[in-house]
Length: 221
Image 1 (cartoon, one colour):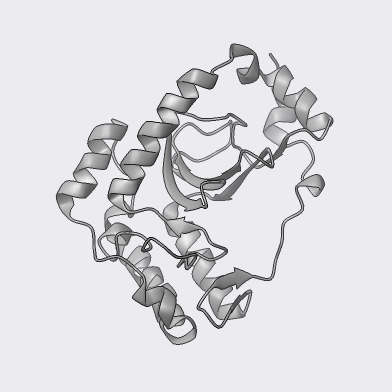
Image 2: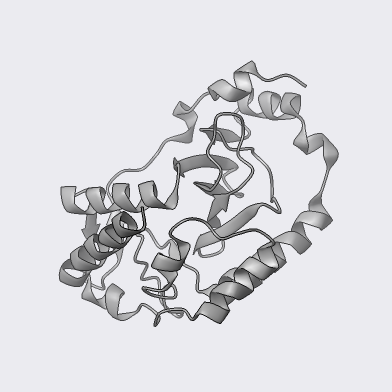
């Protein structure tokens, strides 16, 4: 698994080095072991498989720019940014907690009324103590490692949450799958690059097409 993750990181960096050298030049230096250990200590759980391989390659995207190695402005967080983001998430989560919003019937009603949108086995929550932030798009769209998936999901899956758009989707079952699929998309031409090095996908998902996820259709309570 680790060698496969490293190979896919190399594929991504090779493509970006040729097509978007500004983005590669903007990457931070590799993260230190103490910085990675600080995440595990704050999160209270072992880090996902492949985490060390990725953050030891580069410690997230540099600040002060929209350039993002994972495209569409989804900037990978550095270890220190990740810890700060996670702490803030938990503070906000406690202040916004409402038991009614954690019930299956609430989720079903909101999806049926096109108030929230869910794709895959992810719980449509505001925040979760077992969601570890991965990337941030201007603080508006966050990708997480999800360690408490909905029924049928995979522990450690990559999810994307857009609080403003009220959308929740599973992007990949694991970091390994996420990196492999992204590398495939880059090499197949799904992404293009602007003159400034901004990597952008030609595919725009339509949440109104998602409907009711199977796991939630079968759930009750």
